[in-house]
Image (cartoon, rainbow over all chains, first blue to last red):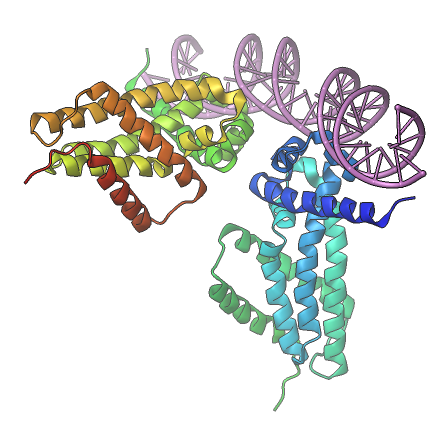
Amino acid sequence: MINKDSTRTHNDMRNNIVSIASNVFEKFGFKKTTVDDIAQALRKGKSSIYYYFKSKEDIFKAVVEKEADAHRAEINRIMESNLNTIEKLKSYVKARMLAVKIMANYYTLIRNNDVSNLDLIEKLRAKYDTEELSIIKRLLNEGMDNGLFKVKDIELSSIALLTAMKGLEFPLFIDSPKADNLDKILDDMLDILFYGLVIRKA
Amino acid sequence: MINKDSTRTHNDMRNNIVSIASNVFEKFGFKKTTVDDIAQALRKGKSSIYYYFKSKEDIFKAVVEKEADAHRAEINRIMESNLNTIEKLKSYVKARMLAVKIMANYYTLIRNNDVSNLDLIEKLRAKYDTEELSIIKRLLNEGMDNGLFKVKDIELSSIALLTAMKGLEFPLFIDSPKADNLDKILDDMLDILFYGLVIRKA
DNA sequence: GTACTGTTTTACTAAAATGGTCGAAAATTC
DNA sequence: GAATTTTCGACCATTTTAGTAAAACAGTAC
């Protein structure tokens, strides 16, 4: 029978590996990082890693998930705020674009788009895209409920919005604007985007 | 017969490769950079690289040499200035410590000190150390000539000074101080170092 | 001292990756 | 059109890497 202390230290070790692996992956990227690199940073043997994780990909997913958690916390803060739905959607889009920085490892993998990692990219994309669509739908539904939005097909509009944000990723990859510039860029583009969504009030 | 234009474009291509390779080596380090990485950055096939360079190590040496040239230009500017020899030596030491940044690839190789690269490190170390000793000796000789220095054994003092500067590299590796802080740190340490060298004037 | 558990390490394997070469094709020059 | 230069695909030998199994180690309980 596993005692609770050993479970706790097991999880402590897993968290330690994830934390250190995050730094190593950020430095070298998924492909160029070896499990031995991570082991050396931990001052352990490579095989020890496999005691805690199934594979290199398993470690990487845990790293991305930890980063995603930080991003989710930010999204939840926005969703539960007292902002009207337009402001919520604006804040959400900003936070989502900043995810490029918070979820650094995930976006680096996507940016490099190395053909050898397509399988992993697709797995992760599917997972996080589903989450994003869910959030966008909640916001569009909330807007429909309170009369701020008029959307004929929430499903299609959600997909369109997500696709638009993904289109914005590329310039962000290339040229990291300062935070205030990012705000201005997004404000301008969101005002244009909303023009077709918001009911005009006299 | 090679015409001069083809020699020029050949050299242009070599310079282009060195320039692009410099960025790739800086990003990934010598070991993790593959020749294919460099080729992809150049949008050429890997084999094309071998038309211009003998080996991966050959490319890296050319990269380091290009960085060293920038450093040499700075050193020559100091040596040919009208400063007195004490000020020259101070300026030299500062410039040399800044070489950690200018010769980024060389120092990154040394910092990582991966056992698999020891042969390459030793080759490069021998080359650039010899240059440095030569410069330090010139300065000490100049100081002896104009009475500003009193050095019993120029050879030993040169080696001691070079060793001291190498000792300073490590803290610089770890924590990149801002330029003005670096100036202050070096001024303080140089004043202490010179205390035993400069003839006291009444 | 023995038994057990959790963790780490050593030795190993199969597959993938890499440095580098060769010959042929393409592009360029004269 | 021929000569030269440049490029690339296919290939090879070697090295590296992800991952595994078994052994060893450290700590704990009795």
